[in-house]
Image (cartoon, rainbow, N blue to C red; front, top):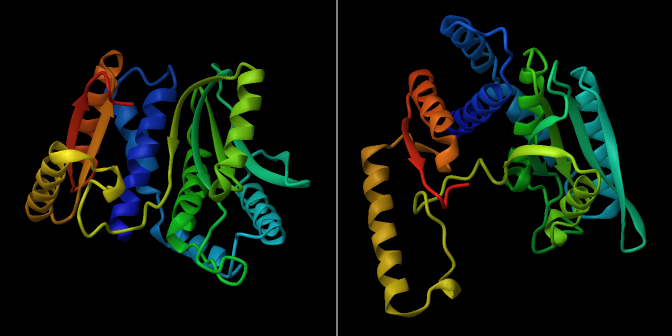
Length: 277
């Protein structure tokens, strides 16, 4: 599982570097050196440590605990030297906090790429115990680690790192941020959402709900997907990374796929289509 999380972070960091790369990287070897240095600095130990610290809150469901966690995340970004602020909103007559950190670009400051996650958790008895190691301690820890790595990379475009509250209440925190971003006309060019990235799916790549299966065709498609996933798990026991994008981004998808293949031991597949992304 640790290797999988590191590879996910490497793919996200690679995507951000390619999307926000500096103009001075005119030669391929300069770009490769920058990428190798950034990917090589990803720390699995940092991710595990953050997840453990998030679990110690026991539950991140209640208002009090979410407030404490928001303060903890704020402090962590400050420790990394990343400008951070609370994005506050009201829900159920209480003031809640999202945590938004910003790594400003050197030239194209208004061009924004985002990596997001949520820090609240839920369980069958959320007021008592909802440690949320995977959902979504894993994603929260990943966003922090991505910020630490990218802080040392000089990029033209701006990277925003958003960690939202009340996702388990219908995405209240992220919806409020999205509303305000629309009102401010923020130039957000791309977003990656990291949610439940530490879970090892026993079926494989595709998850499903039986309630969504309708009719014979749905049953057939489900069986085909299950068979395919078992085959892929046998062929690639270490996992497979799919990098997808729409036709206008075909070049970026191919470049990211080739570089990820070079810098990891996992199988990487490029996918371009109108329904991708």
